[in-house]
Length: 271
Image (cartoon, rainbow, N blue to C red; front, side, top):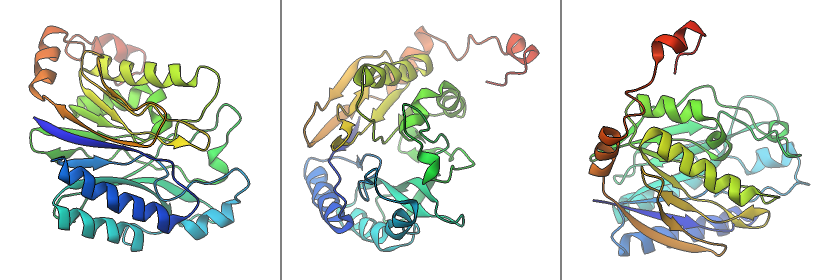
């Protein structure tokens, strides 16, 4: 049984205040016997619409910068793994990466994932400020779990979730800053459940709340059942995942096994 803590927060524009909040929640999660805490997208800071790309680059840091270093120290001190999304500096002028950093309980950096799919939709254009990543991160082995990392808008692309599942993922973790709007909560809930059902895996999706975001951080099991929905307030929830359920569901509902890859290949599809 794995215990995951989901932190639903409303990041401010003050990076140091957000770091202080994260450090407090790491301690709280450990007191609740969680083995991992995952934060939402934009943990480092809220980027308001009027903030320029140049201004955002001044907020960004490298993975070995002060923000992640402080979280690494906290992870090691508390012996808890941490998933922390940051604005990461890039070599492209006036662009940053939207990056999720997996910190192991010993304080080492286990994986770095840079968001592939930028949110150029519903009137937003993340590509004005962000540089897209170029690779799916390797799975992180976490006891009997094998975790694949996604970020927010990635949830709308089933190809990515399927590729992670095919590589062995039994948990998908998707830190998010899901923006408010007509039917957006319904979209959020539907996408998370769909990714869980079609791949027979758990989906853990911490989300921002307040500002322009929907909240409703979720955890869903391989049958699409909601294990947690954090509503619309800042909150820390600890959930237990029974990992053997993944194997049981994939045996009863063998969607991955029953794929017709021979037919897909004729149409140039590889997933």
